[in-house]
Length: 229
Image (cartoon, rainbow, N blue to C red; front, side):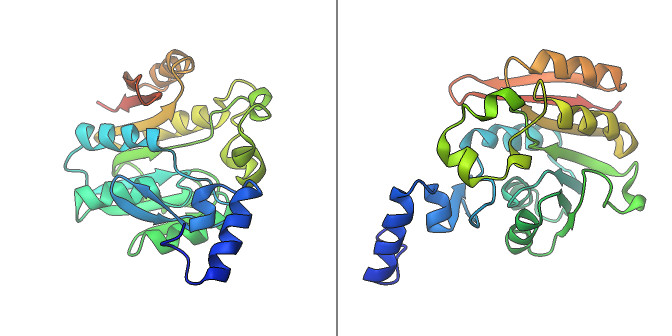
């Protein structure tokens, strides 16, 4: 925090906020994610480092993607990391939380960032044209939200954490809607937990897509890929 403070008074204020339990990233105003400095405003979901697996898996699955959609984009960390590697891809990002959208618009200069519920705000002309669709949607079961660290449950929006009774309410909707948006050969990739992954893979199959699981036990990260043939 010392290097981020602009004065002794600023440093004292930052220390007080941190001691009071605010996430370090909110105190600093940024988080490092895949080598990028991503702005994170107070009250906005803080990107987890395990989500780097989602980005790496997406780049491996569709290394030449030209149309990318980032659902539940939060502050835009995943989209920013994808564009940093893909280069000239067109990025469309969506989040339901207005504070997250405002933050994402700062981090995703040149991208189209929409506020709304999943696919609803996307331009209709994108249907059937999306090469790469990613979603870091909430997947914590409602009953487990209260067990999360205070930094998360007190300072991040519930809408970014609570995934419903089994944690998969939002992700099921993402999967169900994906076939209408993906281009032939397109891929949907979502982050979930190891325990939830087989259930979500069944939902992928039911949607007419081909599932594949990727895991990094050391990072505690699990990604489900859904391929359109």
